[in-house]
Image 1 (cartoon, rainbow, N blue to C red):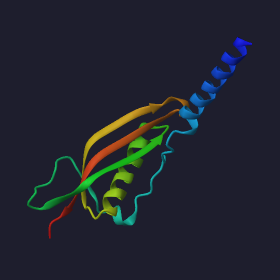
Image 2 (cartoon, helix red, strand yellow):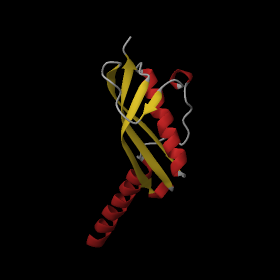
Image 3 (cartoon, rainbow, N blue to C red):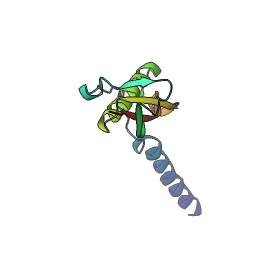
Image 4 (cartoon, helix red, strand yellow):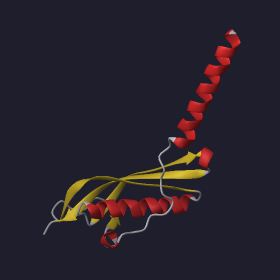
Length: 120
């Protein structure tokens, strides 16, 4: 009888682990359409001059795909869309993080950046 309780607990743990690893993972797009408002958002390598741009805020773009280049491109589109949504026209990327999603056979890309708008 003691063994039956142990087996039940182990079954529950396996089910919870399965849902944690598969069902509860954040669903990320593998394709992000660049919105018309984001077409003019420039991705720069260096922060712009404080005399010409002002910092609007930090933004994050994310995507996941079977191909790393596809995930990277989708994350960049997501980043540019988010920058445009807060009125920015330039974004820099501070962190470019990729991590495997083994049970999904995908790679997740997360871009952390700063969004700037032109000082008029």
